[in-house]
Image (cartoon, rainbow, N blue to C red):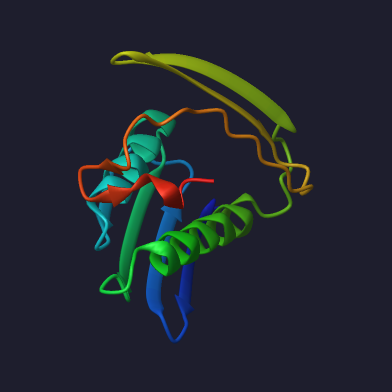
Length: 136
């Protein structure tokens, strides 16, 4: 069974389309109006060895909030759909990776219970054009 998905999300603020292949090679085609988001999603796919396409348009003339939120929802839905019944998949995993001057750590549990912890001090108000106040 192919572990792929195709998700479309359309609201009054955004239009999002996501394609995901969990058994890919890290190919990514990310096109959103938020360059930092493009970069982060590309890194996730590249280092996660899955293929990811994200096409997004949003009301960024106001700010990036709706686009970031709706892309996150659509990517999450794509993972849920591609994982299917999760047969043969271990429930949780973790990885720590040094990237540039940072140590990135990710611990994931696909049991379906939502929980999020984010520990990061951002010294600036912006990363490029990205407003860091939009980070949880």
